[in-house]
Image 1 (cartoon, rainbow, N blue to C red):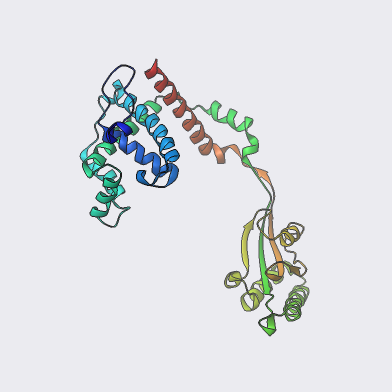
Image 2 (tube, helix red, strand yellow):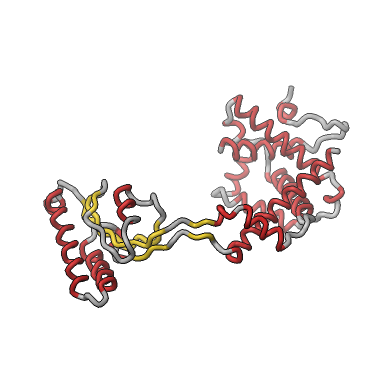
Length: 307
């Protein structure tokens, strides 16, 4: 058996001649790189067998679509093929490197362009067929929302800042006792600052926290005043996470410890859990329904080709 016979797909049931072997070879290369991230010659025997099965399926599907009535009037301009070719070429440092890689996989630039043109025709036909789906109505969107409300629930989140003093016995100022003394001193200054401005303690605490973080925190967030942003549960170390979600808005934590060292947390704001309103998620629902109907329309059409 020749090499071309080994890679060529089986004849169709109708007895029609298959496309040239290089068209199938492109499918085999695509299956090898997508499934195993390797070229065809680098595949093991079992991997090659799996890639061949996948390539035979995708090649047969492409053949069916390209022989359909819908494909007869699809014209792909040379400029579009060239853009697709250039997209492949950009993955290589030079034209010669691309051609060498194609040769290793039993292809050349001409055959690659032919395969890309077929692929573009296939995509255009499938897009055209999918567009025939029934329109998405307001009732469809609202029904989806009511049946899947849990998908639009957002959990409680917290906006927070922190100050970190690391523990590192290689540095005297960061040995455990010294680090603890430093974080305790920061905590005391923050509490004192908030108590001085009794008329607006939350604002005073926030401003003081930002200042202390910039001057003394040993976390990269120090430049942003210790800002951690808006956090979901589970994003911080367990001890910090539990403390943050137990704080009230504007409240300062006690000294906390993690693998990194000692922390102080400030809960800036609490964002309660809620269900997103219909109007805010309507575009997302419409897109999901449209994609579902497009795929179903394509599936039904492909089934009709086999009938």
